[in-house]
Length: 126
Image 1 (tube, rainbow, N blue to C red):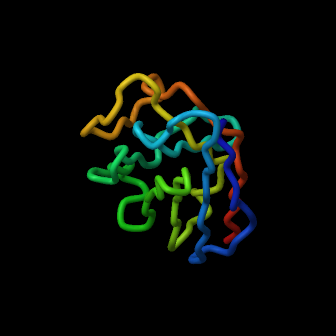
Image 2: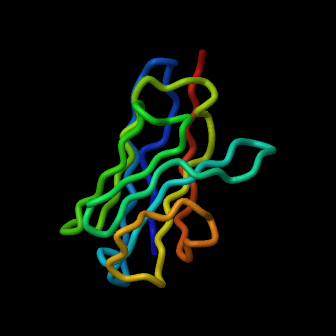
């Protein structure tokens, strides 16, 4: 199970840190990612990280503003979001791959993720 938290209302230019706590299986062996879905739109990739934090990848729209990290001892993945923009408003979902242990590549496609947390809503006001 994945439990996302940390969403809220913030003004443009502000920051939020999302957390995703994993339980029930060995998530530390797998890549994890964050996706987001704005109202009326498809779910889009935001960021992903390999099992050992050796590699990360980001959507172009968040590069330089968002940082993904993980603490395997705490079974938690984080998304630090800085310089937020109104267009970042969305429900944010964390996800875990479950098929490739110890992958050296972070995955950025929805089809590579099998476990999903519930969304946490981020609203950025202008």
